[in-house]
Image (cartoon, rainbow, N blue to C red; front, side):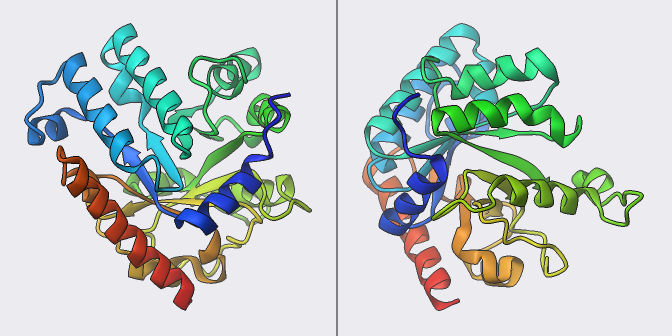
Length: 281
């Protein structure tokens, strides 16, 4: 055991103390260029270090997108390792956005890469895909419980293509997205103050009142900013579950770099807006 409290309890406290904002660390080539950085490992390291310095001591969650580091090979992964460690040391919870999904020993190995207490990339939570069947995630669920970490499972995503799978109707009349939410609700049953197994639900999806979003777990909500959603949309989309929403903002904050103070101010403005919306709901 790591000695960590369950992820859900740590996340609830971080959201209450720092606000619910999650800032993405997405060093894609166009954003590096906007910052005046080269699309190389040096640019990657400068970008990541600056984001961590600017916001890791004040936002609840940082979410590095693993792919943007992996594309640089082992040196890029080394930058990711350092960024994760420094962000956690500054008090932010780290959700590794790797969207892993497989079966059996392979799924277990993916989980060990990010959720095992001794892993170089040890993170507080991991995004995973359930589309080999929710049961395929069992090794990750078990390891998360053992280590006090969590999962965010793709349920109702903001990309238009997701609907062909997530809205498909099963023989029992319930669609796939609703089925994923039901599994997560069962994982979180009885957990206080918040379960550790969350769903990814897009903030751009409009009225979701036909879905049971109160899964006693967190809802990671991409789509605010560049994809068109705003903090003001959150109550309409998430209803009574809005208090458990972790809105993810990337470009709307990151485009204010590379100046640390400007980045910090941008994150604080978004965080305050989200706090106000949630408090008023």
